[in-house]
Length: 134
Image (cartoon, rainbow, N blue to C red; front, side, top):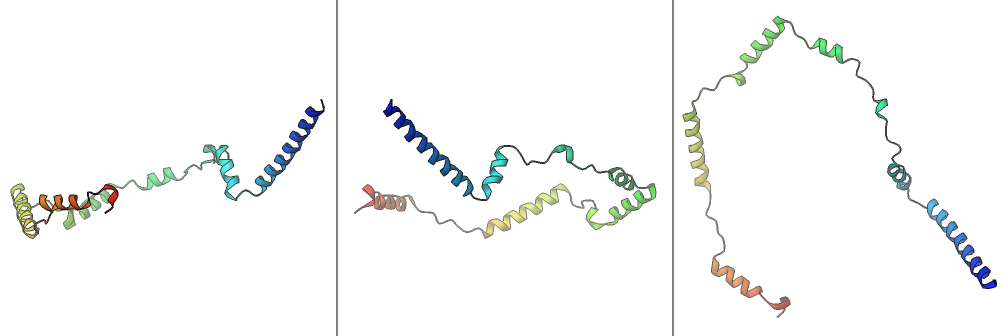
């Protein structure tokens, strides 16, 4: 019975020391620990019931309605802008322009200088070493 009580006493003393260490660790936790703990617990998030309602929406929608004169003036201003003009060229003219542009770009391209098969074979032979030593 004595060994049992002795072992039980050691276990209790060890647990008491562990509890003290845990409380010390909890006190020495970094600043972000509390925020992360509440995030993992699912707390601290705003409630959807607290989202404010837009009460000015109907007034804004009513102010966007234009009269017939305002609509006509807006359409006339749009059509008067040179950027809204119709396309003057036909499809064939556009294709001819793109072909000419492609030909000019192709003239500016330089010949590629890739390695030949013989050069690649020489590189392979040079670096094909066991464990890259020699």
